[in-house]
Image (spheres, rainbow, N blue to C red):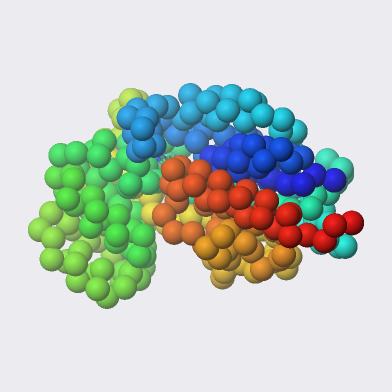
Length: 307
Ligand code: FAD
């Protein structure tokens, strides 16, 4: 068996692999797609000490760093089940094979829920964005919309209002769902307009960049167009944890509950990055949490009974 088996090859998984392997213990990493969300990212400007990079470039650097160590990397492998018996954790793969390890670190990340309207996929990274902390500054002085009136949508609108020239917040429901204190703050801002009972139906562009969006007024069924340069979709971040239901403690949103050390509800099983309850889903945070989970797994190993 492995000493540490990491499931996921994004920034959290890669950091965990480097930290584990540097302890000289038997380390494996399985990932469906090495690089994770970073593979879908264009400009990255907030990885501290790297003023500017691009997703695929950072993924190559992560892979190169992991490759400096003795890590058994198994790509294009999907984990489907986790079980524990006799101090060993078993991960069953979609291929039918299974792997066992004394400790496991889950770093399977998350994905942004999409609107699934025409133009959204075409203009992703060309005006359609999902992360205000990442891409907000790219829209300095421009007009943007935020889709979604929950806490993350309203927080994004407040954040962006300080950077861009104008924000239109679009909510499907008849009212916003964010906390009252956030809604009060939002309504105090002069460059924000809130539209409720509105369903976004199309992202418009000129072939290069976003130029506007179309929404349906759900009261009258009229279609209306807004001219703008950016659209931030804030309708939910879905953790990749479906395969863990019933195996360990998840929140009602599917995040793996972890403590300050990255420990889950199952002894010997740790988790890190976007799939966990750790707030603020960012690369630098995922890297830190992955490193921490590896140190916690090592700490667990040295306390295990000698066989
Ligand atoms: P992920 O990157 O999601 O990696 C998950 C890994 O797990 C992948 O290898 C995946 O294939 C694998 N996996 C999932 N399920 C399974 C399974 N069942 N079996 C095996 N493997 C599995 N953050 C920033 O800090 N700066 C930015 O500029 C920035 N821009 C972004 C732009 C976009 C478009 C997106 C989508 C995100 C952006 N982020 C940015 C957020 C950042 O990418 C994430 O916070 C970070 O990648 C999380 O790392 P992670 O390792 O937890 O998960």
